[in-house]
Length: 117
Image (tube, rainbow, N blue to C red; front, side):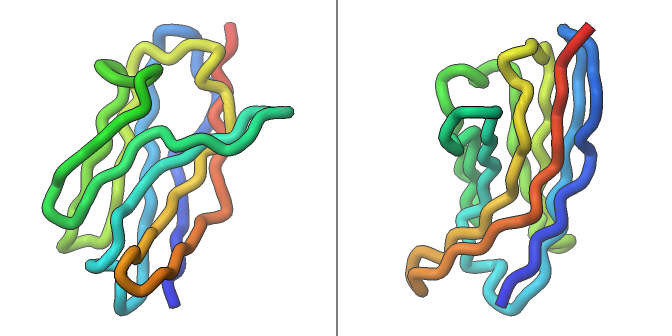
């Protein structure tokens, strides 16, 4: 079992920055590809960024160059640094732990990010 707790969301003006954190607990966290997803009203949930236990990262095209995902394995925490935010980034952001080898996937409760002037 894995528990994920997100924090760091909020209201920010266009062009601003936020850093999201996801604290993970559980015996299999080290096996997980950790990711951030987002879901805007009326839209499907989409992948934002992922990071493997070895630090390899990947991003959806719309956030490349603006967002940075990182992982502190000692703290079992994943971060999403979001810069140059725009209103299209408004969504609930979810942390995900995907233990591919075990075919298990866990989600956090989500944190709201609102970009508005």
